[in-house]
Amino acid sequence: MYTFPNKLRNLAIAFMVIGFLGLTYGFLSAPATLEESKAIVAASHSDGHGTSHEEASHDPQETNAVEVQAGHHEDAAASHSTSTEEGHDVDHDEHVFHQLSNKPWAALYVAAFFFFMIALGVLAFYAIQRAAQAGWSPVLYRVMEGITAYLLPGGIVVIVILVLSTLHLNHLFIWMDPEVVAHDKLIAGKTGFLNAPFFLTRAVIFLSGWVLYRYFSRKFSLAQDSATDLSNHKKNFRISAAFLVFYIVTESIMSWDWIMSIDPHWFSTLFGWYVFASMFVSGITTIAMVTIYLKSKGYLEFVNDSHIHDLGKFMFGISVFWTYLWFSQFMLIWYSNIPEEVTYFITRIEDYNLPFFGMLVMNFIFPLLILMNSDYKRVNYFIVMAGIVILLGHYMDVFNMIMPSAVGDQWFIGAPEIGGFFFFLGLFIFIVFKELTKAPLLAKGDPYMGESERFHY
View 1 (tube, rainbow, N blue to C red):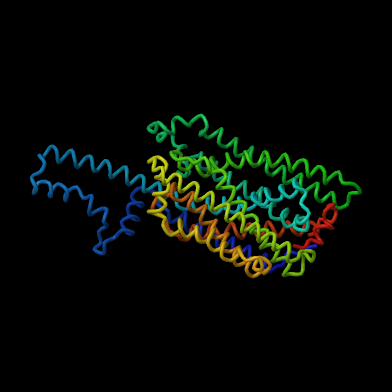
View 2: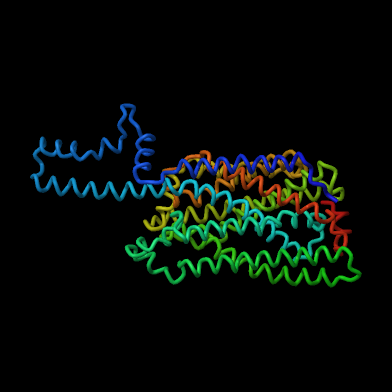
């Protein structure tokens, strides 16, 4: 039986405390009024003379003086121009205010979704192994079951954020604002699907289905350890095959709901697959890293270099698959140059240049160079190094999917972003390793366990 070491437990708690403080600071420092927002913008865009660029370029008195001196407009025209500019400035200030107010919420949401999607990606990989009746992976089943324990608490956190969004405590989803819908024909045409009751109902159905599969599969897995027949194994096979059908449909709709609808004017038919690839490789990478950690502590004695090698192959292969989807989505939209579609990438290239292209290096080029060599896939150091980069890269992927639509160009990696990541990292470690203590780390009743123990590539 695995014992949760106090050092790791304390580290997880420390991460949660540090993360909570960072998130708290982020929410407390976010503007509560329009005036506070304007003060923040003025301070961040100061030209060194105590005046912001925005104030200098939108000063009505200065504008009027220039117009009078130039003689280009009559008094009435100048007055109308000034009032128009002031109206535009008010709309712009309100827009920036909502973006700055969204910043801690978006940081919280990015981190919450990222760690939730790791558990969901592991659940999909686990179900595939069960449905395929794979012979190499049963020695890793308990690790996968431990990681998927985060699915329920992580999913509840995400749904709570979604509920708070429907209560208008933030502006992450603009289609939830009745005033926006009233003045936007495109969003108004989607209200049959994008409405709060249906949105939350779908979320609850999705999470319930995923958690129920995890519960019964874990139950049958544990029962098989002491069973005298293969009835529990067969039940696990059947529900895993059925779950994969449910999963591939609900995962796609979830990605539309929880991420793509943050920017309801844009859509991609590849988006569900793109999010799936990101969560799948993140989940497999986490399996590899948890496995290597446990083995370094003297557990999982039946896991050998060949198992690590296979996990490394999956990390490499799904990283290439993710890149294929990224390129397909990006290049087709960029080449067609349809304004409604290409604006999604223009925003990210212009305002998020470093994280946008940086994640491509972290998620494709780095794993390609490190994991292409077959021998490196057997070396724990290379797997861990590649795994850390891949996980951080896919965190940046989620960051790029959510932040530009939620906060526009008002972004930077600050206290709430770092705090959110550390809080959910600590929560993830605490829940996963706590779950690993509840059952033997070897699913000895699985009929393919002997083959898995003797596995050699």
